[in-house]
Amino acid sequence: MDTNDPGYQILSDDKIVRSLFEEEENLIDDLTEGRESVEDEARSGRPISTSTAETIDAVEKLLRSDRRLKIREMATQLDLPKTTVHEIVHEKLNFRKVCARWVPKMLTADHKTKRMRISIEHLNRARNDESFLDHLITGDETWVHYSTPYNKRDSMTWKHPESPVPKKFKQTISSKKVMATVFWDAQGNLLIEFLSKNETINADRYIETLKKLKEKIRFKRRGQLRSGNVKLLHDNATPHSAGKTKAWLEKYKWEVLEHPPYSPDLAPSDFFFVWSVKKHLGGTPFQNEEEVMNAVTEYFDGKCAAYFRDGIFKLLHRWEKCINLNGDYVEK
Image 1 (spheres, rainbow, N blue to C red):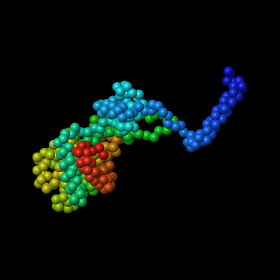
Image 2: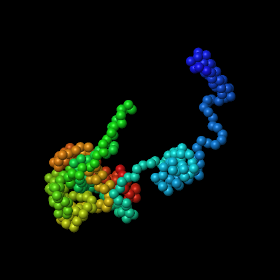
Image 3: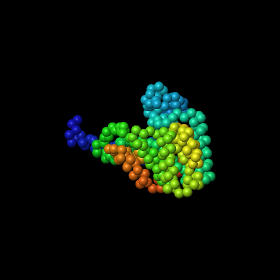
Image 4: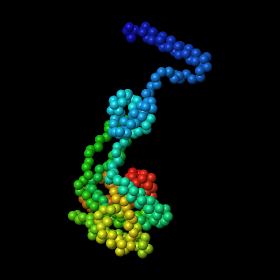
């Protein structure tokens, strides 16, 4: 029949009217039978989902045997629909696919035990002595590059549905860099020092830095040197743990807090201080060494005491979490 024929339109309207009458009659029948809901009732027969206890167990066993399996691969091996496997994995087993987290070292049982022991000792001291963290001085060396790319999250932008997808060109970390050594405490920045070109960090060079730190403490934290309240937290790098360095620290009665090996997650300069400055400098290109040094110095000089206190006192949470994780790495 020609759809342009007026008779076709009349016939179509007729069908619509009859359909409306049939729906109304069905609704009246439902009400006379005592039904209060017009929703479809459950039907007998095979359920839509085949995720029985046996099927769920089979999917979980397969998933735990190889956590990189795809939904399609599991469905093929178990001869199940992909929708069923997807429902079991996400809704029944509550699995989510995530990227592996980078860690500096595969910790052994001894490493974890040592991390727990040290965390317990430091946490107990902090709880029993309110001034413990206030007198803690921490520091480390880090490379600052002339050009540091934005990380993925910081490069995100707002986009309207009608706007084109933004593009980001691949960036690489500049080979030109400056070694910065930074010491700080809960009150603020104590010392920022930059390594000269062709100079390396060894025990003798590190002791020279500690001498400068000592003078900064004398000037900025009056009385702390005389009272013997200097508690130094640095990592186990060779210049820090060398015999000469230990002898110098013992001479001036500085207490060096024990720090577990391969544990940047328990060092404020790593998980808080260095991370924040590199995030701040991300995407900013520098032309020379002087620009890099000025940018780092200005960044830390512009921070208030609350910023530094927050970084130091995050140790409490990290020690607690390390203990709760049985010595494993603390992510946040």
